Length: 121
Length: 121
DNA sequence: ATTTCATATGAATAATTGTTCATATGTTTA
DNA sequence: TAAACATATGAACAATTATTCATATGAAAT
Image (tube, rainbow over all chains, first blue to last red; front, side):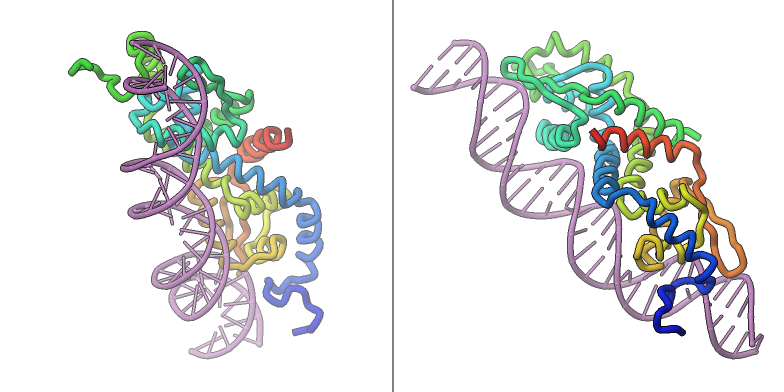
């Protein structure tokens, strides 16, 4: 084994795959961008949050009504709305005592329906 | 407070919101479908898996090369490829000693680029 | 047949996360 | 001003998960 062999732990065909490895590695998007992208999908990766988005897709709604629709506690919904808001997927406005949440992004329903297409196969 | 008040824990405007609540609740997709959808997005919700998908988007590749491109252990990559395969996002074929992985779904790059659009704002 | 190589996998560990409970905040109504 | 109401939030707990390490599997080469 050569001292300067970068592929000591990799498959043997160093010369052939080397080109490919560098080509792909160089084209990889920024670490931060990939992290943000994963974070975004992580937000969609929870049934409760998906349900909330579906709900708000139908109509803007106060926290309490969302909790009622989903049969969950106000606290649980509120915590998840916080996550959705940080991801800029929902926004809110005050209306008297209540806080009304609504979708904040046109991409959302497209992303979800794309996912559904895959799942439905 | 009435005994038959279904909204004991909810906001006070029971009569007004009742219609909305039932309308939205009835239109909610099947529990199982929402679960599968969340599971799918969960798969995208990890930087390592996103990087693997990006890599395979450029070219099909053996496990060892993917590990090399991402600077991670063979074991870590193999575990994640298993997750991606279970989600039917990648497939593999044997080529001699190596196992070549490639993307298994046309939706993937669309879903990812939709997500990127949102993140890039 | 035995050794080598590429990949898969089970167990263990550390880190992350969703919900609950109790309570704080801020608005409205009496 | 005080009480009632809608929502937010911090701490705690249980559950999930990504990686590492050690080892198993299975194909190719000697």
